[in-house]
Every structure is written in structure tokens, then in C-alpha cells.
Image 1 (tube, protein in one colour):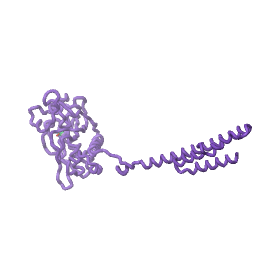
Image 2 (cartoon, helix red, strand yellow; image 1 turned 120 degrees about the vertical axis):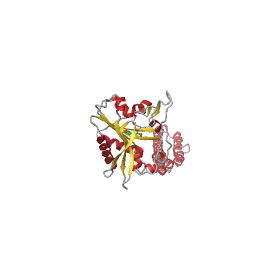
Image 3 (cartoon, helix red, strand yellow; image 1 turned 90 degrees about the vertical axis):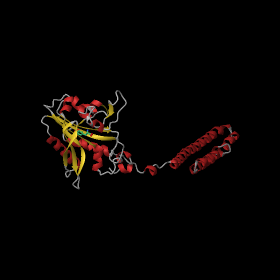
Image 4 (cartoon, protein in one colour; image 1 turned 135 degrees about the vertical axis):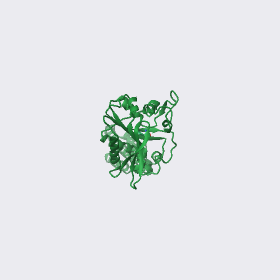
Length: 332
Ligand code: DAH
């Protein structure tokens, strides 16, 4: 009996080990543990034994059954996890085929230009100031010496906001209002640059965007002259564009500066390119902010950051900056 049982157990364990999949395993389990198994037959035969032998024989059969069951359970766990792994592998989606390798983005070209401008001016002792994108007529025009009858007011192509009195609230049409906010809130000496978004009713074309970026500079201190302005522009142009690029001032007109100028930068072919406006802060503007023009003088300048990026990277069309075509953006 014992050697018979041992042979059944050996055969069952070998069969369990050899089962190739869960289906085969369950058929084999019926064969070695089911009602028609040798084990079941042995259990039935117990009745024919002498009562004295029956207990030991019954225990031997139970032990044999437990060993076989344990072997089948272990094999089942193994086969189930192998089949799961095969299934997962089959269902895996290879996303790299769609997206290519994982890539990191980078700052937009205009953001890079703005950051570099800030670095250059901070390096020269300026601080970065900010102001709101929605302004009142006082900050966008009046305090800047542009009263409502002034013809320059029309040239700003202002986008008005329907809040309060008509034409009193607007999207700022330049960054110059940040000059006023700074002078109202701080005592001179003042050395600030104010980068930010600005808005005009311009239709988008190769050289215009209705929402664009400017950077404003303002210095208010004692004994400031036009020479300080020219020197600051020259210094900035060298730091930003490189040593060979020259700058020059050309007489111009802005209501908020007197005298006023436009500043140009030199190109490799000897021609000049207009970059922005500048001048000595108008005494009316200083007075509007509670600063005594007999004690303090200042200069200011302003130019478009998007245009600067267009020049520096020799782009054909300023709209490339907002099309967000990755093939374009990747180049910078
Ligand atoms: N605010 C002017 C503009 O948009 C640019 C400008 C000119 C700013 C002269 C200044 C300045 O600070 O002095 O178009």
C-alpha cells in the first residue's frame, strides 16, 4: 500500500511539473485528485481493511493528497503569472512609435529674449518692475503728458475695455505707464526696466502683432543727461547683440520725453535698423508723479521685444512667434 501510494504521488508531482498551461493542469488535477483517481480508489478500499490498519492507511492517503494538492497549487500560481505576463506583453502599447523619444520643451524664443534683456539691465544696476495689463487713461496717457485732445493719443490704436466711463479703461498700449506707477510709489533715485505685454488694434501681418511685448527703461537721479541715455543704450546694444553692433540716436518726438529720439542699431551691410524710442523724461511727467524737475532729471526708453527677436534671429515674419509651430520653435 505505502509503496503504491508513493508511486502515485511521484507520478502526480511529475505530471503537475510537466503541465504546460492552466488548461492541462486542471485536466491533470482531475486525473490525480478527482473521483476516478487512484487516490479516490485507495480511499474506498480502506473499508476492506482491518480496523487496526485503517487509521494509519487513512492518514497515509490524506498526506499523499495534501502533497499532490500543494504541488498543483504551486504549479497553478506559476503558470497563472506566466500567462498574465504574456497577456500584458501582448496588450502593451508602444507609445514611442507615436511620440518618438521623450523630449523636453524649452522656453519660447520671446521669453528667452526677455530673460536676456532683464539679465543685461540687471547687470547694469537696473531693477525689474511690473504693472497691470489693463490701465486707466491716467496711466496710459494723461500722466505721460498725453491729454485727451492730443493727436498722439490716436496713434496708439488703443483697445478699450467696457468698464466705467467710455475710453477710460484700456489694455495698455505701451509699457510706459509702468514709469508712472513706479515714480508715484518710489523716491528717486530710480533705475528700472519694465518688460510686459502690450496691445493695439493692429491687424497681424509680417511686422505687426495685436498683442506684443515691450520693455521700458526709466532712470531718475540727480544730474542725468542725454549722454547717460546714449551710453546706456550703447552698453545694452553691445551686451545684447555683440561687440560689433553700433547704436545711434535720431531726433524724434514723444509727448513724454523732451528732447526725444529714436535709436537705431547698425547692420553688417552698414545700414541702420530702428529699434525703439527714448528721451529725457518730460518735466510735466515728473511733476505729475510728484517729483521736482529742478532737483531730479531722468531718461526713459522703450522698444518691442518681439521685434528685437525678429531682428536678432533674422525672421521673415513676426507671426512665426505666435503660430506655435514646433518645427520653428525647436530651432531656438
Ligand atoms: N511708449 C513708446 C511706444 O510705444 C515707446 C517709448 C518711446 C518709450 C520713448 C519711452 C520713450 O520710454 O522715452 O511706442
